[in-house]
Image 1 (cartoon, one colour):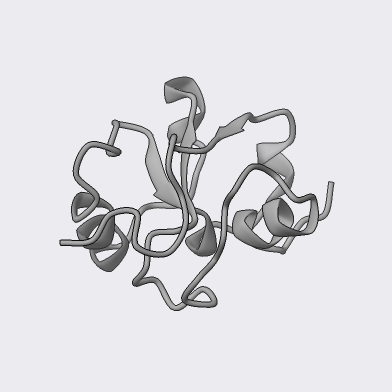
Image 2 (cartoon, rainbow, N blue to C red):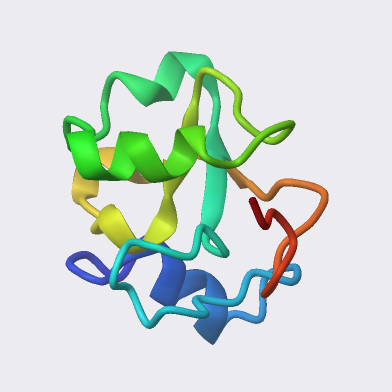
Length: 96
């Protein structure tokens, strides 16, 4: 596993789903919104208030294990974790 890179970058490199990182990891567009299994969520770094704010702006897509892939770096303790994408990703998919 490639530790140190962002989940978003890994997904983009592997062409996973339709994840886009529209804001280039500046934590504002939510196009790298991902889900982790609830049992894996506590193994992730603590979510920042800014990331939480942006996730909550994504109505209909938020679940308890939502995170932004641009805010999480892959680490050894994440090996074997599954990442899921919301049904919709891309520019304009959750405009306010």
